[in-house]
Image (cartoon, rainbow, N blue to C red; front, side, top):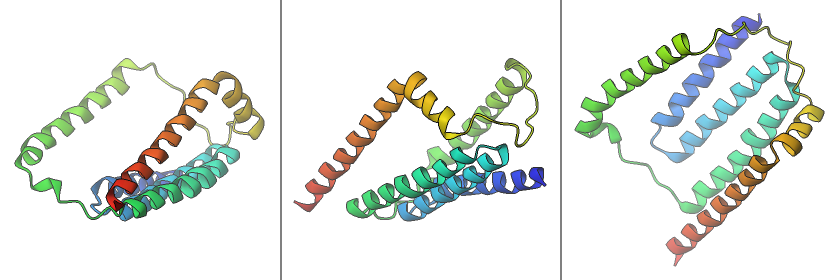
Length: 166
């Protein structure tokens, strides 16, 4: 049953990610990103990391996506033009994507050491104590840098929005 749920939600995550990339309207892209975040939370649940799944839903699919939608609405972003009409994308983009996929497959299969298989529910490091200890000891600097970058992005969005209003 775990394998079936994994396949279903992994396929939903990939489909939502493709929707995120291929949508031309920013609101639709943001909704596709919520689909990706929700399916990732289910995948975390399958691995036995309940706290990480809850944090994924509350922080990313909830708070961060509300912030993204607020910025999109504030900037009044319209629909993008279709980038697939450019001849460069049509003739060069396809072979480049195929080459990159082939390079990733080669790197994963031949250069990385073999890994053991995943057994669902065996992960025990996803509790709040373990996460808190890791964030506030080993990963304190990246955690603080990320919070400063988010603050800079919010201030930048407000400055851009103010210039459009004037």
